[in-house]
Image (tube, rainbow, N blue to C red; front, side, top):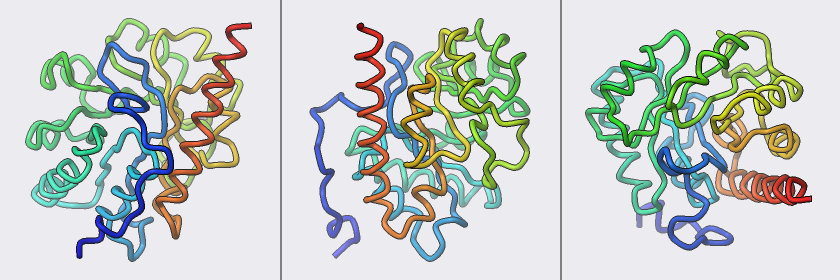
Length: 242
């Protein structure tokens, strides 16, 4: 029996089309899972991804820094096939060549990666493209771009992202929310203990790495985070309506 047959179904399965990340016309909301092979320890990366998706992850970003292109393409193809039945998009970190090779749903690029305009031209108008913002200048420059979301990086200091600028903190995130027209996905030091505060400060999506990869039970970790994020988004919406 394959490990996927042993996993429990999501706690609260959603109707098709709900709770997922969508293309340009929709706000990017929910639990955004970013992979880290090393943090998975002895767990198979594919198993962790599947458990995270079944626990509520609405988007998966495959990030590989130390593997060959051939391995990256093969792994991306496996992951894409694994999560496709759940309607969860696959985002490739940095590598547009890999994204094109496997027909991934999109890419995430940083400030030192391929320029956004070229990435959009290569990926096409329907691809999901996220852009990291690490300084206020990045935020201002992104305002004129048609990217699908901004990755606010890092919200808090984190060992999984060591080549970034100073953390934004909740105040910095709130400042971006007040200025930017884009959906915001916070990343960096995020977990079940601070996810609600980050959503209330303005994040539409919460990106996590170690909170799921390093967990002994990725399904339970994702389910807990998904519940916190959903509740915080609903709370934020209620406050806006008052």
